[in-house]
Image (tube, rainbow, N blue to C red):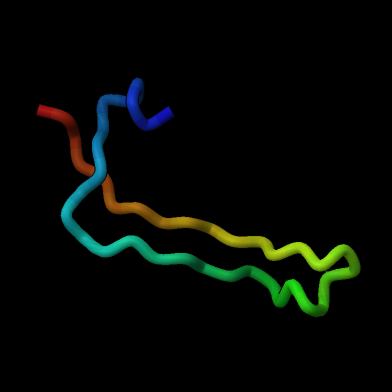
Length: 42
């Protein structure tokens, strides 16, 4: 968990990387990476 990692959310933008097209997946699932900038807690 982020709370216990020694890091916190950074100041940069968050973004999503879609690894597939859910409309083409047999179960209609989307595979997504959610990217959040991090910085060390002070």
